[in-house]
Length: 263
Ligand SMILES: C[S@@+](CC[C@H](N)C(=O)[O-])C[C@H]1O[C@@H](n2cnc3c(N)ncnc32)[C@H](O)[C@@H]1O
Image (cartoon, rainbow, N blue to C red; front, side, top):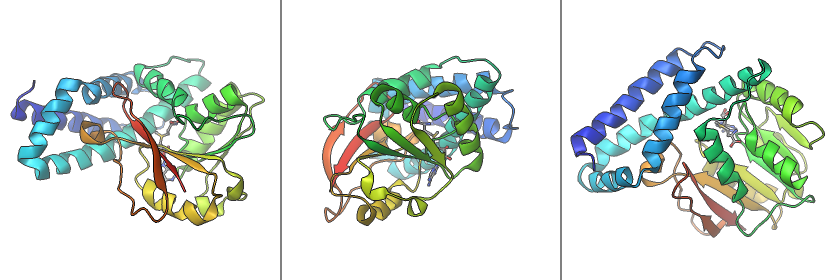
């Protein structure tokens, strides 16, 4: 197990490398390999059981310092994952279609996303934070035939994501929009809602959706607690008056876990 000093040094090194890579993003795919490597490496770091033990131990001794580092790493790694998706979308346009370890990990997670609340061809799914390479909408629509709407606050992500869907999702019922939830129509018809774990405002949006959705809607909230919180926004306790936890889908070998909510 890493010592406290080494563990901190490790987190700081990831932080510095992510900051550098964000600063070098120039809307081309020139730093794709470098970013892919560090994200794969970081995914391994946060899912390593020994590191997780080191985190829990350190948390007891230095929780303030750790919370500060976690907050910085979370914000910067979220930007890096979003950039990574942009690179992947650009590279697809250029004729490359490689899948990194990180994406394989995410795709494996998607299979188990809704636990016992399975998506069928009659389902209507909303994904908040669909990204520049909308794997979740693509996989769900492809495997189930459901209608999927993805929203993203980043206009460039919607433009790139729409090209990816055009290329890989021919004939699938997928729509991507640069809108906030309150601008969407037919929210009462939604059966399943998925939150990307790197959406900082996910719990505000969840609150907003409560009066706008039907009693049957199921929410898959992707999150990361403990060491995984350096790569994901964590779970937030709810007061029990609105959404209630229906199930946890814990994925020890994956970068995020999932909490399922119902009304
Ligand atoms: C890396 S990703 C996408 C997830 C991935 N494509 C998937 O299918 O699992 C996260 C996306 O969330 C978007 N995002 C961040 N905050 C958001 C918000 N408040 N509302 C909607 N999208 C948001 C980012 O712009 C980014 O494109």
